[in-house]
Length: 498
Ligand code: GLU
Image 1: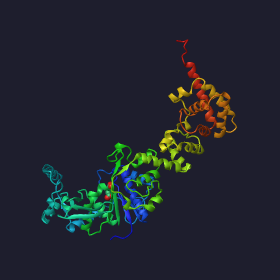
Image 2: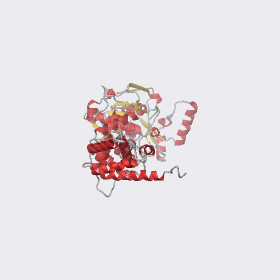
Image 3: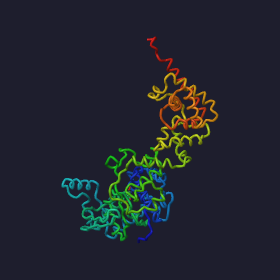
Image 4: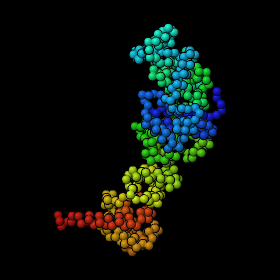
């Protein structure tokens, strides 16, 4: 019996990592549930034992939690309809398959894999309808009993009614009709006692009182089978909504081959969960008024299935990057620092024997985040905040480290040593004054100084950078650069030596 209560589920099969398409389905279910103060359920569909991957199950939980898609009922949280892992519910499926058989909607099939292969071969040759030919549909009771007595393995198949037009309403695509004659008597229960996807999915959606099924449109061809199953059980089906396919920006299906495709890949690539959450929500859903950047509460408040387009949506990496940049800029610096520290640790740039200098890392994050779209960009630019340059960018060195740069750097060294405070303003004043007194442009001091302290010719504003690096680090690096320039100058062959 259907009530007005919204109960939805995300039902992944742990056969691999959670890809962004799956995460989008989970997210739409989540938003829909929250919008209607309903219940979001996580159910693990692990009945295909050949493809089951233990690690994948953990990764599904981890990915959903990282994204902030928490489930009200499911593994780890439980609830009144559990267990929520299908391999722990096998008894339910057997009972229900037997029930259908008793009602005359299903039958035992003893056909061997060899026979099935032979009929398939013949069907392919004739280019006719593929699928089971219904041989065991008409076995007599005696034939069945003797096969059972001799211990022959069997499956239970669903008896597809012939000549029917199976009709259902899809909340995104409208009415869908399917001729039952195109379907074959599919398996409900396999010889190993495990149910097929179709049986377990329908039984659980019913027992878990699912009101709406929101899933990827690759499942749309399964829905007529499900509708017939609901009918055979005498249950009313949930509402269905099949979400549009996601294409990669260069066309074709999204795949690992075409870049990152799993949620955890995006985490590793330096995206923030709130940015991916927002971006995924817009894959197929248009909240209207060109709204794009929205927080979860805003999304929940305006989410509706009517605004989901049946057209394919495109996974535009550039847009995700842009959106991530917005979220990077808005994250409180302490929290962003919390994300960055483990990445710096991974690089081995932190002195693990000393207490963590959070203030220093926070200042660095403030300087670098404006130029970073992802955490990984930030970390890629962070090297010289921890490691003194041992080499300098070759092109920049040619330009900014001529022999006389050593004198300029020494001049700066002296000035900075005596500079009363090491703040961006006093440093800027010092640079300007020194340049003026020498009658040179400020750039003649600024460029070599930047190269000396960072090893590269780009980055945040120099005076902020110097202030952040601090006097001790800066002076040490300036002196190293002076030594480097001098060494190079003496090593340079002169015309006389030739
Ligand atoms: N187990 C199916 C999957 O892996 C679930 C499909 C559905 O939601 O019905 O996506």
